[in-house]
Image (cartoon, rainbow over all chains, first blue to last red; front, side, top):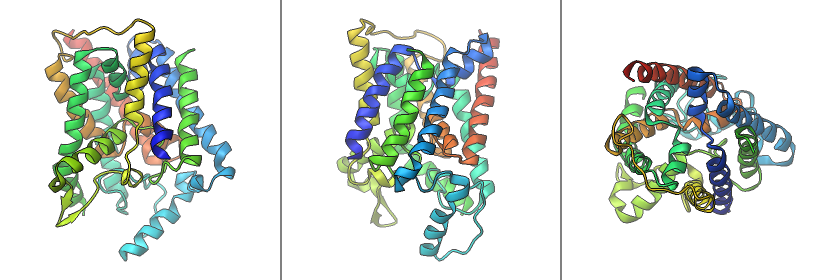
Length: 173
Length: 161
C-alpha cells in the first residue's frame, strides 16, 4: 500500500513542483540574496500543511498517536529500550528515528549530527543550485548536471550505509 | 498555482499517507527525498549484490522499516511527474552547465556530500520540515542550521562571482 501511496504523492509533487519551481533551499537563498519570498512561502506552506494535517487527522488514525513528538514520542523510546535492556531518561529533544544513532539516549550526539548535517545540507545545497527535490525535477527536465547530481546522490547513499554510518555510530556508542 | 499552495497540498498529503496508508515507521516519513532515495537504492542494490547488506554476519536491510519488503516510490513518482509536466508544457530540453560548481562532474560530488549530510541528520530539507511540523525539536534546530548553511553558501557564491 505504501508503494502506491508514495508513488501517487510523488507524481502530484513532481508535476506541481515542476510547474512552480518548488525549492526549499532556493527559497531561503532567494530571500537572503534578493528578498524574494515567493519560493520561501512554499516552504512555509509545506510546514503549515503538514502541521495542520497531523493536527486534524490525529483523532482519526492510530498511526499519528506519536504526534506531537516531543510529548508523545516517549513511548516509542521506552518500548525500544526495554527490548534492548537499556534504562534511560527520555529527553524531549530526542529526534524522530532516522539518523545513524536512531535510538541512542545521547541527546548531545543527536544535536551534533543535526547541526553538522544541517549546515552541510544548506551550504552544499546552495552550491548545487537547489534542494534535492529541485535537482530531481531539473533532472527530469533534461539537465545533465542534475542527472550527475542524482548519480552522486545514489552513490552517496551506498557509501554512507557501508562506511560513514557505522563509523558515526561507533564514535557515539 | 503558487509555491505556497503546492507546499500546502504536499504537506497535507504527507500527513495523509502516514495516517491512512501505512507509511511508517519511522513517523514523519511521508515525503523525503534523501531517505526515500536511500531506501530505493539499497533495496535494489541488496538484490543485485546480497553481500552488501550483510553486517556482522546477518543480512540486514539498510534503510527505514517501512521499505523492508517493498521500497517507497516517491522518487520514481517525482521523476515521472516532473518529466510528464515538462513534456506537456514543452519545457523538456537537454542542457548542461559548462563551468562553476554546477558542472556535471562537480555536481556528482556535491550530490554525494548532500546525501551524506542529509543522512547524518536523518532527512533532506523536506523531511526536516516535516519532522519540524511533527514537533520534533531537534529537527527545528536542524532547519535553523540549514538556513545558516544557506547564508554562508550564498556569501561564498557572491564573493566568488
